[in-house]
Image (cartoon, rainbow, N blue to C red; front, side, top):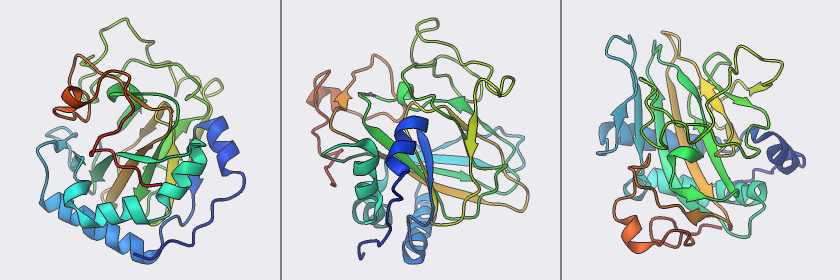
Length: 270
């Protein structure tokens, strides 16, 4: 794949560091979007053991997720290594190096009612550190009603209790050990939100501690999204006594707690 000609807008790094989320218009070109679409369809027809349906049985649509398949999906690997994403990640993280962390497929089929509730990503993970970025990249048009919403500045440091999306159980940190989510939608004056309608090739970039959520999709809308996470210089392995999401089987046998994420699962790409 030829290198992208995407140029990061000058204000992007400052905006990312301040708000914890920015929109990037046209970060992938039409050829890359087509390739990514092929990769998503391949993933949907070859779901991994980590795949799950995150919507309820009575939902008229279906919300399908899968994780950590990039090494067996050439389209994903090409986008993650050879598009503009690693270079953009390096700038946004203000890091000298960029490591792949993992990929995440999120597909809401037409009519899916299941919302994605407010949450941060990093409490579900096995990493510590501040230098990180996630890209959320749709290959279908996404309306404001169905896009990701972010609480501006919520990546500043507070970790909120991670809970299961459907039944709100604390499967990770024990109850009471982290702050509970505030009433974000009930107090918009205290929790300003960012949200953007997106076209194929656009992306949002956000910090793993930025609070975010999204709605369902209309009966006429399909929302296929590929998300890729990158790690920067200060990221370290945070061993957990529970199964992280996603899990990395055997990693704790290879990396000590607090070690640099120097493992074949997490190659340096920039």
